[in-house]
Image (tube, rainbow, N blue to C red; front, side, top):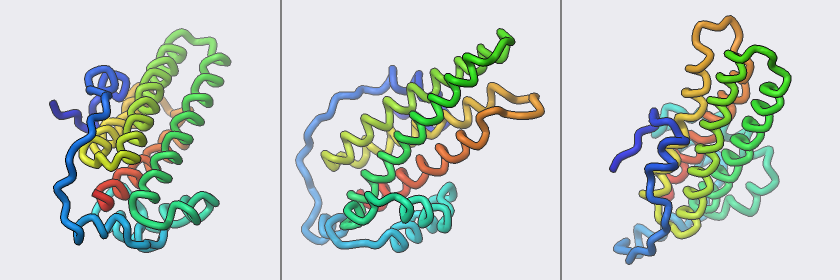
Length: 192
């Protein structure tokens, strides 16, 4: 089964098998060393921005460089992929909290329904990101990339719920979450 980035994360989380299954590694010493080789945030961001259209180099460097955890994570691509995924989880949780706060203040039933749709999407995305994090730690990169790609749909689906409105109340949060999720996917692809 293939889950695309446009699938709703809440539905994708239900449809995907979440069990971690250890696999035998068939990589050569040369292939596995690429994951173990030291890499800087700048090098990782350059590579991700060159191979993934959703990754902006300057934003990637600024976001990871501002996080003190990047000094420890920057040992290799796997460490940076884990950190970027943790940051995407943080953004999903922050966005979910912001949406929940806005929903509680909203009087319009139609707007509340839109907020609830977004809450469902971000809840599903957070679950997918946590599963991807587990797979990254186990170095099951294919499954992690599948889950990260599925989690990307949260921001798009949430913004789609507000189409036709003059102002999208969660646009800035959606955008930042999407950018972080793209970075996590780019780093995971490089670590694989």
